[in-house]
Length: 188
Image 1 (cartoon, rainbow, N blue to C red):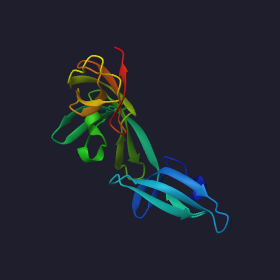
Image 2 (image 1 turned 120 degrees about the horizontal axis):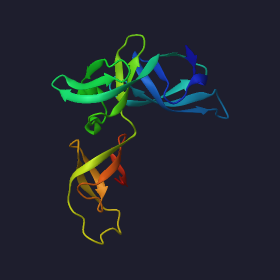
Image 3 (image 1 turned 90 degrees about the vertical axis):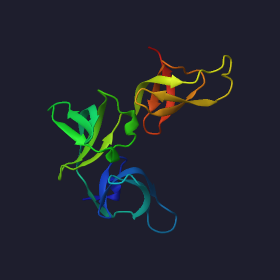
């Protein structure tokens, strides 16, 4: 059991018969009336984000979760195959449980969040940034770099990312896996 005093980003709580991770919280002490805590909670079952307000001092159940290091190996008809980096145990995870699975490439290190009591897999967390090679992109026109114009580029995993005009086929780029956006071009 924990109270609203123990809230922090990343804490997993049991709420409405589901597991939620606290994405954002704010303690509010109005001039009149009792204090409360405004939160944004993300469901670990379906990924939906909800907002909820807790009265100050309310008790909530904290779920025990573990982050385990895994490495992505390959995909087959059962799903995505990952290997534990210390025990070499392999597990299969369906596509629906992985957010932004289009950025998975062979050998990528990820963290799998597991409910410690039931050993259920809750989510697969990709690293925030990955380096990918551009496999196809329309060539940009020379001197056309004054504006913030973007063009689609296909990367090595088959995903499409919007990139600036100066990025060409064969370039390596850094991509933010949280919002599928281009960050920078990487020197080889």
